[in-house]
Each structure stands twice: as structure tokens, then as C-alpha cells.
Length: 118
Length: 118
DNA sequence: TGAAATGTTAGCGATATAGCGAATCAAAAC
DNA sequence: GTTTTGATTCGCTATATCGCTAACATTTCA
Image 1: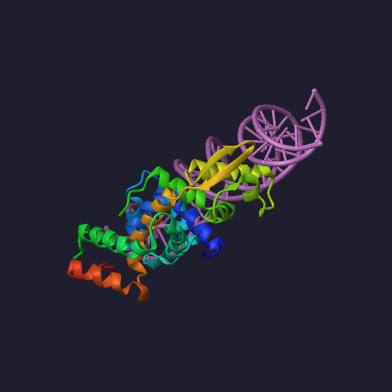
Image 2 (image 1 turned 90 degrees about the horizontal axis):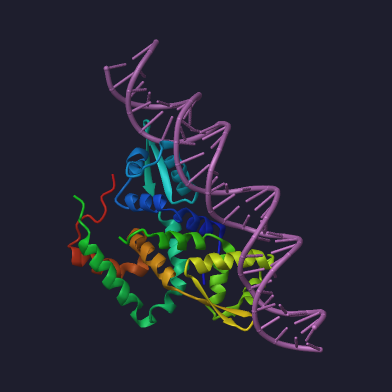
């Protein structure tokens, strides 16, 4: 059973918003500027900037300056910690023997659906 | 990539508090009364009751009345949904322990540049 | 019946979060 | 050098959350 840390709590807090969840999903396809990330949302630039800084504070996003553009990248370490915390509960919905197989089947089929980038 | 639902957002929101996280961990050992769950925390009964109702609203805890006692039980379905959502990002930190998975994924997709950053 | 035990609900204040527009800053473009 | 672009910071308001005490219901026990 993994420890409950402030970082972990902050990670779940950062994840508890659809804008921020979708932003992370977008970043999984690769780095993007703030404007590109904000585009799908009906939000002011200031509003989205706040969401982004919450993701940054949680360590989920890093920024690199390229001229006046801010390039954002996904940082998965906090996601891994959250995943590990939740993994403990896997015993309640999956038998130990089937865990690996379940995951492999799901992840490989999902990966097949995924369009490979050029 | 799993969908972002209000339920999932509410699950992450419910998880973003150390009292609630610890309460879920305690419930993993089996059902307990409200008083037993509240005991470890320096909180008023009313305060803890609110935390519990948040867990209930997120579907993470169910209650059954036994006289004046409220027996709480863990409900893992929302945890599973959260776990599944995070599983997508596993591709970004797969390491030694996941080499088998990596091999299977790559061999089934013919290994086309999995992620093309930059 | 009356009192204690188990929890919840109501209401309060303090603090945090979400959203906006306006102002600001730095880099690019003209 | 001025304007445009990309993005943040600064107020401001509205709403949500956290924690408390007090009051309330219900069940159990004397």
C-alpha cells in the first residue's frame, strides 16, 4: 500500500477537472504551445493559464520557452504515482492471475486502434 | 484513450484529500462503521461525515444501516475507471518490469515510431 | 421514560477555486 | 519604433470546500 503524500493529493486534485484532464490527454500526443492547448476550450486565455499553472504545480506539465511561445510537455511521474496508488485496489476487481493478461490484452488492442504518427 | 466523464472527474475530486484517501485504504481491509473510520482523524464527527458523503456521492463508498450504526463498504468501480484512465499513460513510463508488455505492444503494431515528440 | 450512543443536517466563517476583463511583459513582425 | 502576438499576472466576483458548533433524528440501554 503506497503512502499518501501531499504530492499525490495534489495530483488527484489537478486531475479533478475536465479541462485539465483533456489537456493532459492532448499532451500525450506530444508537446504543444499554450495557445494550441487552450484552443479546444471556451475559456479566456487567463482562465486557461490558471489551469496550466495548476498542472505545473502538480508536476504534470513542464514548460520550455521558445521565443514568445511556451512549449508545454507532459510529465508522467505524478501520473505514475497515482497509478501505483490505485494499483493496490486492483485486487478487488481482478484476480491476481489475470492481472497481467487483462492489461496486455487491453493495452495492445487500444494501441492497434491508435493511429501511428508519422 | 478513455473518455472523460463527470463521474471520473468526481472520482479524482473525491481522491484529492488525504482523509478520504486514508478512509478508502482503511475500507480495503473490510467494512467499518462511521465512528471506526473517523477515529484516526482529528476531526469533528460532522466534519468527517461530510468527507464520507463526498466519497458516497462519488460512488466510492456505500452504506448499510444496522440499527444506529452505519456500516460503510468500499466500492471499487470508480477506482477501476480512474485506474483505466491512467493506464493509458503507462506507455510513457514503461520500464524493466514492463518489458514484456512493451515487446508485445511493439510486435503487434510493427513498431511505428510510437510517439513522435518535437 | 429518560439518557447515552451513533450519525446527519443546518448554519457559520475562513479559505480556495473558477471564471472574467484589464493591464502587463517579452518577442516578432512590420 | 510601433504594433501584433503569445502568454502571464492582477484585481474582482461568484461559488465551492473545509472545519467548527449546535441542533436534530434514531436506536439502544438503564
